[in-house]
Image (cartoon, rainbow, N blue to C red; front, side, top):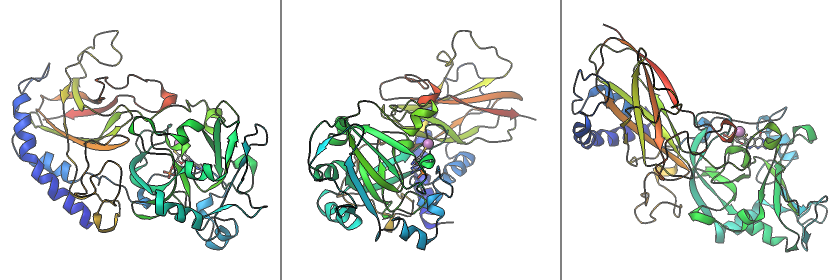
Length: 420
Ligand SMILES: Nc1nc2c(c(=O)[nH]1)N[C@H]1C(S)=C(S)[C@@H](COP(=O)(O)O)O[C@H]1N2
Ligand SMILES: [Mo]
């Protein structure tokens, strides 16, 4: 077992007592379900499931990958990556006016003029402007997050200001290395206001060069990618090579061409991570999972087990009238994982106290939290388990934004068989 994992487990071991004291108080309210067995303190099955949870941070190499290109840029060998500017010593970012929707700027950063922005320039800006923040990377079109990390970089606006724009600037768009083939280009964009200002306590949009304290790997988009804290993954362009300041007034994202809602912000939703595959009648049911904490925050996670013979009331497609039960959101782990050097949150990191290294609130927005619950046992039969989040505004998943092409938030359902 990896050391950080065993420590995480030890930490969650301490949690169990508190957890069950709380659970004992609610165990009488089980809705339509018969109560077979009372959840006992220190239930070994639940403990085992909590002990087996993933670490809060994901190692760079363990992230899910969403990369286009033939060949994918991160699969090029080192010599080729040097040739095309995909190593830290060869990287050059061009920042210029969009030729079709010109912005007036006095100092474009270009290769012709030998003013392109280098990795050294980036590190120099970082001495004064470095920012770090936790963020979950999620593909708008996939269910589970690709990974949770602490992203480090320089606010994009610092580079924007170097170009000395003076007028006609409404939007910024950008793309990465794409084998010099226009059909392979993957492009995204932002209103300039989002680049210049961080509303509602959001971290800035960054030019990112480190993840979990290590240089960004080629697969994660190194040497430099954009990271947009509150957005789905397609805004966070990897192998960044070109940035355009534009007077365009609408989005021109590659993802927009694929019927996606390109203005969608991260949603709050949850899924299970472990559900027992076989259950005996009366055996308590240990369930764990994660929640993605979107821009709306997270109040709690709830679960509900329905007997498959029960008919559901009509006209309630989000099951708002079902007898949902609260699960327990797990507290911050003592050990973060993800390959973080010495397992220490770097200082400063937004959302963390620089003295203690602990989060200032929990769960952290734009990141993940884990949860667990022990449900009372059931008679033999077939059941469906569902889970949902209630966001910090009190709104139950999949509302307030239920549409599929603005990111996944469907209520997950898992079959359960209880057999004698
Ligand atoms: N240059 C480039 N950047 C890209 C992509 C890509 O194909 N090419 N995929 C995007 C999409 S759709 C997602 S969801 C995220 C995935 O990030 P990851 O592979 O680091 O997990 O990267 C984004 N950045
Ligand atoms: Mo994606």
